[in-house]
Length: 323
Ligand code: UT7
Image (cartoon, rainbow, N blue to C red; front, side, top):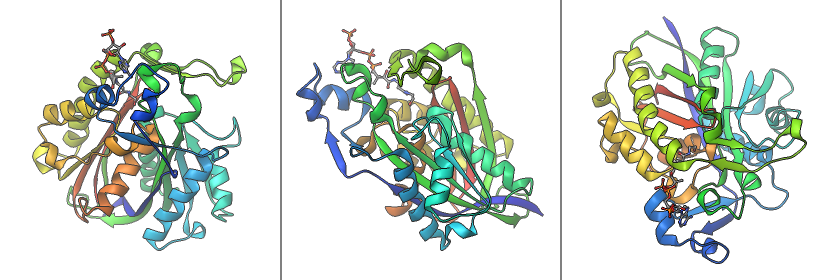
């Protein structure tokens, strides 16, 4: 018998305010056509004034718990992937823990920028297979609108706010790749690429800072590294691209998603795409796409799923799981 971390529920939350590309035409030298053709993004959601990452995360968490038929009291741990926590400390995860009325267990944030949800899933899996937790809520939540430079057309049109969550539970499998749950994980980072994507502020500098990105360079690394990590995660369990029902990629740019799918050898009809509606929501993008994929009937129980993501660090990775 092998302990597997099986997804029991999924949910998401998007702030009410939807901002279509044309809104940027009013203040920036940009067009809807440029944004759609270079990124695939048509609209994104922005959090309301005063609405924080832990607010978004709590709503997504409640939706995921409801779909799992659980409450906060059923959980042993919460892992929240975010780079835009409400405060320097405490963690946004402990704020969600309190909002859910969960008085036991433990909660912490994971900061791996756009790869954050993949890192958080890998951590949750490690806690579950090592017997340290039975039920773990994994959330990706971001308010990237708070760290945009609204005068920089090459970045501010790309990002959005949102949150998604899954509930994982320990279940016994037979150790084969037919088991439900997380089958393999593959994580990487390389700090030499720090300057390609970063925020130029932080606690030590007593500023919040704004996002800076060498888009073309990040694009180049993304296409190369995402296919590599997805192949590596599949290899670990003796599976190939032909076995994949759905690729659920980080939603940064439709051209990255298409190039990676091509390199992987998976047709676009087997890729969940939400970038047109959400923009790049960093650590929230994969759980948002999982939740939307389930909601619209694409992802079904037993499907083999590959998730992959890359972001600031650079940090990247992938997870193979059976839904
Ligand atoms: O989630 C973390 C990972 N992040 C990513 O994966 C993002 C990766 N990068 C990208 O998605 C793409 O590189 C971008 C969407 C950011 C840019 O697309 P690109 O095809 O790489 O364009 P580019 O940066 O090479 O820029 C082409 C031109 C430039 O003008 P010149 O130098 O050719 O005259 C830019 O100044 O497009 C210009 N440009 C714009 N024009 C109109 C840049 N932003 C805009 C804009 N509207 N918003």
